Image (cartoon, rainbow over all chains, first blue to last red; front, side):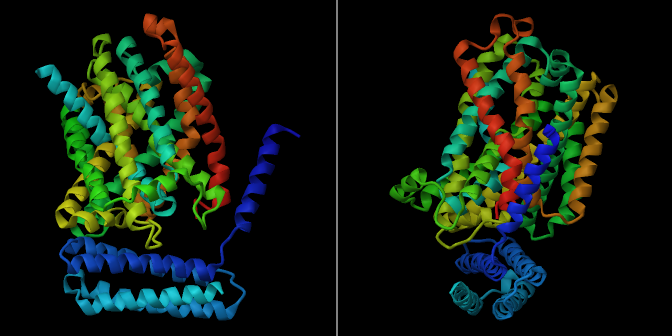
Length: 135
Length: 408
């Protein structure tokens, strides 16, 4: 077999192997959203302690909102066969989107202790959903 | 005294100029996912860039000619063209990532969306290349880039648990990470440390600054002191992420997450300093990559080149850079994530490494160019060992990227 064709075959096998390692979409999307929400929570905490600047906190909130949006999109595009699991993930991702959207809209300079509590509670909900999905 | 100042300045700019968006992002991603378990790759990468950068600097200082001028002459047009194609495309990708990095850093400072900063950043890069002298350009960005020392300050302020970090050093992939992902990031870190443009810029910069054999000692000092200290900053970035983000289960995906540990450790002042440092580091790297696109093409085709010449005397060199900047802006304008561009650029850098480093190794051994300044035996052995490593990383990079889905 010519060398070029052999390499093509190897590449095709690797590509298939890559497709085969696709993670559980419900878990991976909730995990991504959790990561984004935790960062937003930390940034708001630092902002309330006057250890982070307002523009920086705003960028973190916007980035986190984008990340949750991307997770929702990924879940929609996935071929997760278990509808109950998809529904569970969708609910918690929707919650995360709503909270982050409200906070990003309000602006980093308007953050209060109540907003930090909302984010902390949201992290708890995401953790609970992850634990449930992993069972 | 003047000599001492020049040496200190050279070393400081080498430290400040060592880090770019690829190093910042890759080290933070690795720190947040693997802790310090891939720190050995940074060490291996820094030794590699020291080896080859000082070879490239010596070639330029002794022969008075930059890498690409010699590549075509020494290796023939066919291999030279393969080298050119790979290096040029990687430079262009890295340039796109760096301009995106400037825009992201300015977004952190202003909260204005990064896409609005992209054309501003590209215009500023072009203006500096067009109007500012080589020395001023290199020294200012290198010195302001030194603000990234703030990562080392933050690392110590976070109170590292040395036992835990030592455990991580001896560990392979942490729980939940596959061996393939571990090796994918090992290759990415290696590619980030040995990015090809650094060598092109180093050797062409030596010609721009008119180095001769008498400057070899200073060139060695810049490389052998400045780059390892820059490598320590890479470890500090990974360490900050390992101490702050890893316990929270956060995997770095944005530049805002890279600097979060700094705010945690040092508050607003350190955060502002680091953001300024990131702007300077990415701006400096954008200047270097833009110049490198011009250098590679002009040196290969024998066009007039160099910032020491008026733009009218090196028109094709300047047009190449303008076109490359416009291509970078156009790519970013599609809305592609600059962090993703960065991650892909460091992997493809690893793929192209042999094409960049083999000619340097060959030319640095050629007495026709270097006379009695060819590589000594020990350096040659080290260079060959590294070339094998580079070859392995290059061959493994794309399969690992596919298998892991770009490190997912």
